[in-house]
Image (cartoon, rainbow, N blue to C red; front, side, top):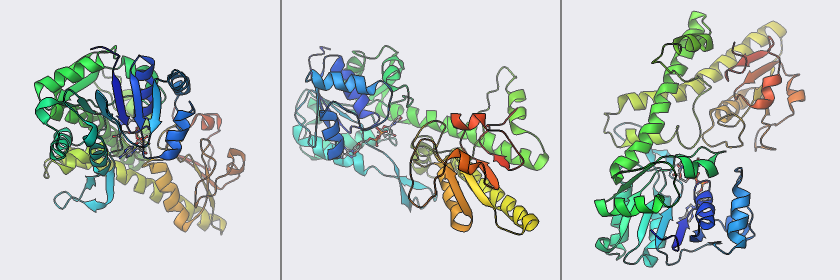
Length: 406
Ligand SMILES: NC(=O)c1ccc[n+]([C@@H]2O[C@H](COP(=O)([O-])OP(=O)(O)OC[C@H]3O[C@@H](n4cnc5c(N)ncnc54)[C@H](O)[C@@H]3O)[C@@H](O)[C@H]2O)c1
């Protein structure tokens, strides 16, 4: 495929903007689209509105060379690439599995926005992590809007990049590409091979969608096992970290680490997409999700019990310092964060202060310095941020983050 093409990328977030900046630096003319005007204005100044190493350099050079510009509306292009959010509805449950339902509203509105501009010969790509059948649904929406599907190619290629390493992984990672028909798969694979140095693996759109969900569900199930062990070990008086280290010496065992739950917009969300479409058959995937969510309730209960013990002994309610709010170490991302959930839950009934080195304020919580928190009566370590690694473990500390493991 020639690189001298126009690409319209819908969604200028953690996935869309790095992809846009990379493609623009590789010779594609990129028209970025976002509904967020502030993001559009920032990008057009050659600046970035999200935190990702090296992205600023890529965006600056792409905008300065006029290969990338951002807009509120799509335009005609050779290739359309959709990278909008795919969360779940917090307030709607599947009546069979009582599990959250995927929210595909963003994909639908992005598809409706590009439909008037899609013309014969175009390639339409969905990169958002999606329930099985979403790419076909997108194609059906385009057809309903008057696009002749026999004249275009539609495919899915899930994104697997790790925040913090996106610019490198966009190029180096292997890529699964699946079209709604073999010609779409070929056209999409040809596009990705222009900038991906990893293997480009061809399949169908449904298998590509399920591959991404499988990767995240695999990790969720493994972490659920670790979290289950952590609760059993607590009853048995066994150090779960020592236990897992010993078990992992087996050449074919690799148990992941327990935590205070599982968060983020991927691992704690995507397995529900499998559960929701499985009609009650995805029992293990569902149980893993529920175990990981339950771990956060369990942690909150443990802290409440410790607070009760303190009150009995000291005759006053303790000040509880929650250490870390983000969903994983050394980031500022609070999406679906179990640490934030636990802190808010404790804050409803207890005297709580919180430390989160990566953010400055959070509505409804009293954020304090590490120094101030060290004077609290109970220190609850929820996230293994690098700042906390220098702390000394004391009888005031409760560690759910594996910071003080042997
Ligand atoms: N961030 C990651 O590390 C990561 C990794 C793998 C997969 N994914 C998946 O990629 C997809 C995008 O994730 P993200 O992290 O980039 O999300 P994000 O929230 O950072 O960015 C999405 C952007 O889309 C914009 N948007 C929403 N609806 C729109 C519309 N109709 N038209 C134009 N713009 C619209 C939002 O304003 C936002 O700027 C999701 O499905 C996510 O699960 C993300």
